[in-house]
Image 1: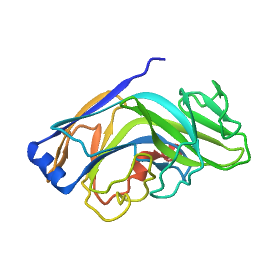
Image 2: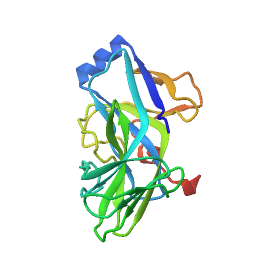
Image 3: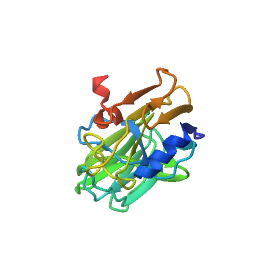
Image 4: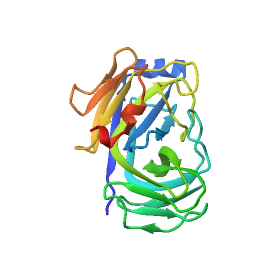
Length: 234
């Protein structure tokens, strides 16, 4: 199956770029998934201090599944132990810390990770960003347990002065790891169109023309409900 390339263009004025640089802001990006596991958490997918007047965030729907010995607690960095390329509808059968085979017998829209050991792990999926598979989410995976994760074509973008590496667990509000400055966020839905264009102003916030495919989120709101969708609640 051919992959799809997605792209969000962020227009930023010269005055806003200067203000962001003077305060030391980073651009953050988070991908959304569907999972009924209440312990699942989003991870920092994109983190960069480098922005331009047209900042491009581009990725493809090429996935990896991973397991880890890390804990899924707020601000923890998930260190990938073993990973494997995987397609929607496939199941990764984890037989040891080295992983195991991939079978085409999973949930059609999701990525399934089956732990056939008695060792509790963390697991999750990664998605290709600028050619590199970067972690999107993580959740506990009990011994002899199964985790099914459905990636969604939704992205949250925001700026913060806190420096947190990609792969870090995000919980609660945008308080990534301590005191700092935060902007409002924008939730962009690319389900119906793989290309979107938005603008950001340091005082006005985000602008996308008022279309239904995006919404602005207050800087003190929790990111988790927007990034971990519980299918039973829809």
